[in-house]
Length: 115
Length: 118
Image (cartoon, rainbow over all chains, first blue to last red; front, side, top):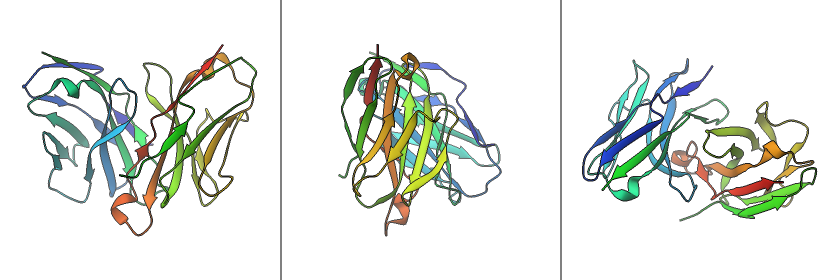
């Protein structure tokens, strides 16, 4: 079974500081993709960052980076220099590469940015 | 940038009524999805659609739900007889750009349709 676990329902960070959101997943597949999606108060789901499992290098997108530990099945998101606009719900997601193009989501982490 | 569009943004309906939520996926995508999010809860998979048929569906997607791609561009979710517990945000998504391998496994969401059942 494919499951995605986010153990932190809520997190907070001071503006301009760094925060790390945790995600673990369970799969028997060797080739897959991992994602972080952001859901601001507007409720639209926005892709933040994507990691391909066959790439060892951690993905980065400006202030957002991941720590991908394939053996540990861990995929954390680091937000540097946090901004007020980063306040949102963050969902970790997993998609096996060659199996039905399906996506599995975690339960989300609500991030508060304190001015 | 291409986007997934959904209508209506908000619909209020009486229990027992039929509702149709509409979506226009990104034009060269091959896979289409409906997800549901009850307020404050996680994003739940309903159904995926590929090559003009349902490829996978969840336990939530029972006989009162159906999907259709009537004209090659729209992708609709019909709820035949709405219940109070169907009140939620419904997200359409698409993935799988033709000729763009990097787009095959990226899910692009619409802004959602909020359904309120009274």
